[in-house]
View 1 (tube, helix red, strand yellow):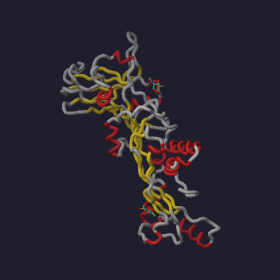
View 2: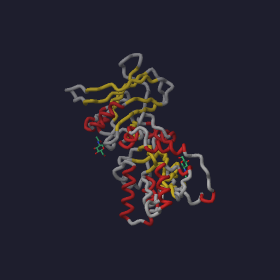
View 3: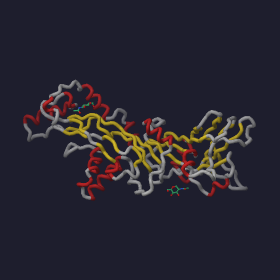
Length: 367
Ligand SMILES: *[C@@H]1O[C@H](CO)[C@@H](O)[C@H](O)[C@H]1NC(C)=O
Ligand SMILES: *[C@@H]1O[C@H](CO)[C@@H](O)[C@H](O)[C@H]1NC(C)=O
């Protein structure tokens, strides 16, 4: 973390935290580097309004620390964008939903897309929800729309929410945003096939009496699960460097502790990164900060087992003890890191949940 003993994310965070002592150019460079590590082209525009509420489903995923689609490390949430077209769908049983995915970075690949509906009060069941991708919209009086059925779900009386799968549509929109004509939601009576449902089923339209806040908690929500380029690379490399190191570290863990030296030698030290101090509290929803830790200390000869040294570090330390001018001592660096989850607002005010690798130091060692 100092001098040649470098690190990535934690270093940039430390530089920003210590921001008071930095000139503006250095601070901006540190912020840029950190944002790029987080996979963001720039910091989202500074906002004065308080952060909008985080959809409950996303809060649960954050608390859970797990994204329910294989390989995904990001969850993005979307609400329907109201337009004039909505007026052409005045009924409750036939509605068009439009989700603007234009803010998804090009390196992200869709791994799952779940559209959830809330049941309406008084819903009884015996109905079926049909979800279609509008491949080509119709032209009134001339052509019929081209629809592709995405999902068909039986609405039972007990269900509080209804989940549907919109992955193939989301994939199509990410490839060709201009071909995104929205989704068509239809609800039919199960028994009288094809008859559109007359009784309450799921919430698709805002009621005149409903305020924004109330509507936000019940309106349809699209959760898009993606895998970004970093996560893909890490996964494709299979066993990463760090997991190998972890194993080496575990092997070398029988520690002989020299109490006297314990203060100065290489070890993990506390470092709390406060996002408010970094100036990011206006777009990071949660956490407010986290324990990043850092590694610092001496790597003395002979290198003790618990210092997690590699054979190379042992040799380097040995050479240094004989001839300090020839090579420096080994460096005290993170040998095991762990991920954290962050909830933030993107440029278009959609809430995003992302798991970031290698954000927190678990173990240090001499390398
Ligand atoms: C989607 O969002 C982008 C970025 O804000 C905007 O330029 C575009 O017009 C939106 N598309 C629609 C159809 O609303
Ligand atoms: C060595 O690594 C292990 C496991 O990663 C860790 O628990 C231990 O604290 C590390 N040693 C030091 C000096 O940090």
